[in-house]
Amino acid sequence: MSDLNSIPVIEALSANIVETKFSDLDTPTIELAKNRIIDVLGCVIGGANAPGNKELTDVVRRWGGQKESTIMIFGQRIPMEHAAMLNAVMARSYDFEVMAYVLEGKFFPSHHAATTVPTALALAEALGAGGKELLTAMIVGDDVAARVQAASSGHPINLGWDGGTTLSHLAAVATSSRLLGLNKSQTKNAFGLVLGLIGGTLQCYWDGVPTFKLGQGTAATHGIFAAKLARSGWTGLYDPLFSRYGYFSVYGGGCVDPGILTRDLGKKFYGEAYFKPYPCGMPTHAGIDAALTLMSQNNVQADEIQEVVIHVPYSHMANFYYAKPFVIRDFPQGDAAFSYIYTVATALVNKSVGLQNFTEEAIHDLRIKSTVEKIKMVERPQDAELGIQVDLHLTNGRQLSEYKSEARDWATKPTPREQVIAKFRQQVAFSKTINSKKAECVLELLRDLERMQSVDQLLKFMMV
Image 1: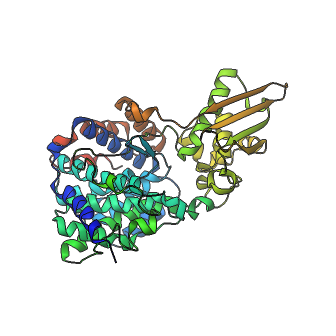
Image 2: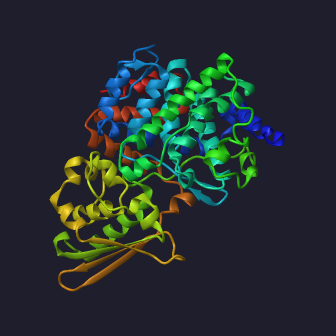
Image 3: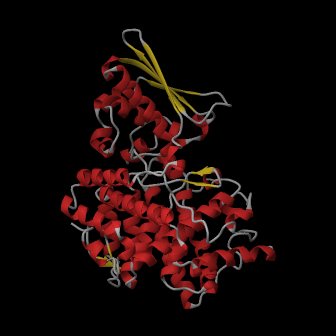
């Protein structure tokens, strides 16, 4: 049986989703949310032609249905939940989108915005909602997922779940419930319904397969679907969070601090703020930074390297997919993007790391193969920080070493919008889908998103 004393928690969260007004949001919260939208739309553009996306789009188009929301880049209106899925998959395709947040001084890795932004846009287009309502719905959705994750005893990955899929279901159903105009009771039911739709195994990262991005999209689909069912009268679990087989029991390893769920609720809104500089898993970024520093500060050429030693965090070699041996299989990008070895190798060879480093041609580069063969990994001491050290042993006998910790400066010093825009333009140049004139129109509209009465004008520039 559920603890009846816990049921008001889901009721409080549902009430906050329904009752929050745009005027309740402070300027930093709004501006950060707009930055997330810029970043995610840039990743939609950059990821549009990633392996598998055209094939997925062709499959979904054949489903037919109401012409409600736009498939970005490729065009055509399809049912809102299907459009949200495709756009979310494109956004996550290079694992480049904004992620992670800080709540009460603690850091939490996450992938929510790649689902909430496409979900909010698809619904806003279909329903004729404006920029203020879009922003409000997205912000309350991100906030719910952040609070539930922070309150959990552990990350879903500790139980074999893909957190980018599990938690994004909660964010999507909150965003959808708000935009579909559900009342508090219906919103609570929507949470109770979406819990039965969550899935997503962590094995996709070990196997290097494209389902890592598919779960980002199914979360959008299921969030909209659950909210529609609740609006039609379906009832969900009475307590989707704290019941015996509720979220915390099944996906969170328990609840370590239930107070986080309602503390400052409606006053503080948490959302992702790490605007990734490299299109690959965040744990690789410290190793990339170390490798790039070594190459730039010491004027080293890749052919001068005799051996590379990557010092990874304790226990990673047995328990973390980033430290698995690097092999190229059926989906090369999936093997490369979540690999300490590949990301350090491409940084050493190319002296930069961008989208171009994760194409199939780049991954098969013989210079990368040669460098990979020179790399070995060792574990750092158990009490060491979670950073990465890269040692280079050169053919002339020199030995160089560089250590980098995980980036945390973004947590206290917000990323300037100019940096987010520069990343957006970088993806436009890489993708070669929409032209630069359309891209600049998108940026101009997003600067004043809260004044937009309809997202139709925005979306027409997000198509070839």
